[in-house]
Length: 339
Image 1 (cartoon, rainbow, N blue to C red):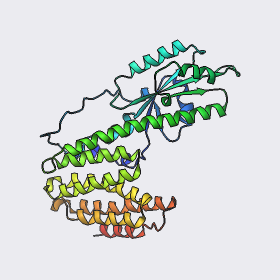
Image 2: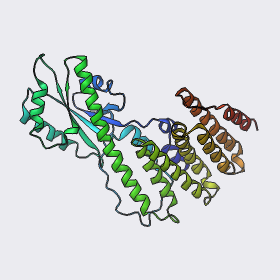
Image 3: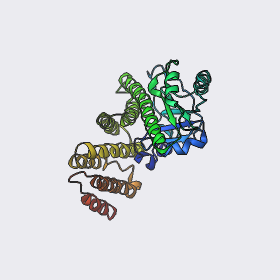
Image 4: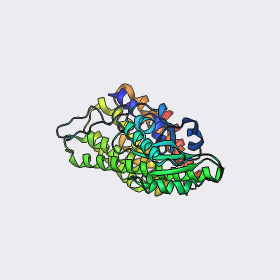
């Protein structure tokens, strides 16, 4: 179980900012040119991502027992592998509306395996002699297709101004599509949460609370913070009922959720509130040694909580957060490691 917990929570992925992962399909020669002009999303060629198929959702969680708090590789999958939207790049075919409509249908069929809620954004890429009125032809196309016009964009590769304007429109369309994905995913996790038995399925409650918070972090920070805090409180409740054999697992998950809570609290409430959360976190877990043979490892764990918070405070101060001072926590870490 410990190995699975470690696999579920790689440190670099925990620190990854909430930036939607976008798969770019088609026109690979244009992928980099487009992605470098869209800083608010992480767009990568679909060939670099593993093939992800739609997984059937469990109809009920009645009687389901979790083998651990978080599934192995869940965070890695959602940060690095499973796109929240797919951008389908198609060449503009000289105003041949019928052909472009056929290309769009083919692309949709080929992406039919995509996970629940993953939307397609169609990007029509035009290039050619200056003076061709691409925008007028684009309006003609839009009048004939039955698709959400917010998820179709025209990009003209004739000048930097045209290209940048097109990339801005594409980025906004991708953020909208990713938003649909995260909204639906968060809603599903919250529905699962409401169906779980608190007495018998607290592991699953923490798991789906963390999932819901992760999805919400891409949409509304204040809602994400509330959900992370709820998941943290549920984990503390679980920690009171587990034996020493699960201390390390609980501490590992607590470290991750506390990191999320502290970072969001620093930037949305105050440094004082974030520090109060960190001290509460350390105070609650200080007795969860995992056994007499793990005392030094446990002290190193407690020291790391202060070090990581000190780093968060340092970053927050650079971003303009008031009264952010991590000196106390560096001292606390040094004291714990010196014991």
